[in-house]
Length: 511
Figure 1 (cartoon, helix red, strand yellow):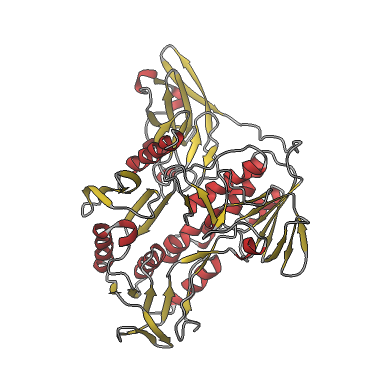
Figure 2 (cartoon, rainbow, N blue to C red):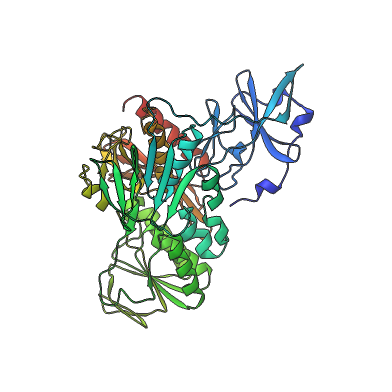
């Protein structure tokens, strides 16, 4: 999170600045009526919008202008310069927008603009009722987008979780480390769903889908009819199958309830064993180490994260944790767990008050399988995120879609991807026929180290580093057969944005 929102700098834009001070294609930071704001120039047009990203508070003047939008350099949210609207997740709320006037070579920004929301309407082809199964990022983004697009039909979100949709990336980072309060976990308060006519049902587990009669049946035997259905069931943690893995101090992290339990147990513990050196495992290790716990990480990998990031970055991440006091046990895994600790396959005994398992997730496909949808390591969807059953869409961790860059179907377990797919699925439920072609993006934060990753490389034969990992200023480009598939960036945010834009253009050209 950022504290830029509380600071004002630059000129008072309401009093006017010289047009020459804003070169074409650039932004100028200032303020209007006590709010951080910026001017953005595209040719002869000048726009005035809020200078703070509504996602995590990044300074937007350090972002990138693309057409009549500005993209945030931190997590690649996208805002309209004309209306301030949040065009792309992970930002869900707009930035403010002001009226701009040009006189005698001077630009003035005054009078905050308000834009009428599209009236709720039922267009001839729109479904009368939409059911969303899943209360994660994809489901929440879809529900919000349906209402933003003016959809007036019955809208029901069935979530198996007991809590409102949460900002999942925070759970293993700021909240677990104790840096952010629990209130920051929620994407929206419960009142938001009531105000927007979204029938959010918590603790509502769907048991089956009847595609012939177009209804879902819940575990309590109640039924909910639909004209269009979005499956956004997400993923479930892979369970550890060794003796003692069901003991009460062996925990996983996926939901808000999981995070609460982990925080409570961590407060009463001194020693923790993290099983798994995935991103989630290493983020948990960093957060618990920040809380002062002794942390041991156990994983079968020879080098943490080598398969995804390559050996150089993997060694760097390992040393980063070791410099913070984490002890690694690599090339092995847990053989058994008891009340006092973990015994490894190589015979090593690790004392532990708390064991956290982070060995990956698998897509929750049981409902899709029961409904007879086409499955191949995920739910098969077309470029519009529609499944093999007309009127049923899928988004998020379960969806395997045709990727125009690689020419293959891919499934990606990233938060930003899930939210963007939810938004695209919502528009396609309304008949807009929008192709999903967003470039995957994710980020990780461990201690004071942050890394962004643009694109998707399930396999690569070359990893080229430009800059220095040790100096925390570099990019790593992943290629297969000479073709760029992805890039990791460390403190080169604009380079990550430009890589995203370049990959988008390649896809637009039919690469």
